[in-house]
Amino acid sequence: MKLAGPLTIRTLFDFQTVSRQEMTKPVIVDLSGVPYMDSAGLGCVVSVFTSCQNRGLGFGVCGLTPRLLTLFEVTHVSTLLPIFESVEAAEAGISKSPK
Image (tube, rainbow, N blue to C red; front, top):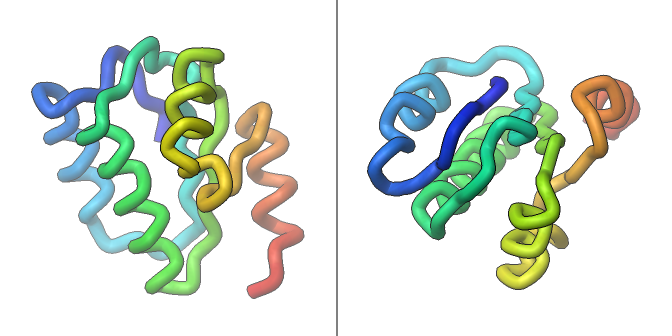
């Protein structure tokens, strides 16, 4: 999933709709096009991660801008979610994860 634009309480509904569909393969959330995220947006990303874990699917997030990386670090989400530099790194990292 490649997201673009701010991910906030006002804009996250399309992302929620897509993320709630039945997932059958690993999910990579590319945030390189997201300049800003509020707590609701962050919660939505964590929710997708939780859904993947519950289904036994791989998950990765990539493309964090310095601003988003700071948000992830301050909230300690960076210790919870697998973060990668790029989509390619996420694909490689997820494929090596234990099932």
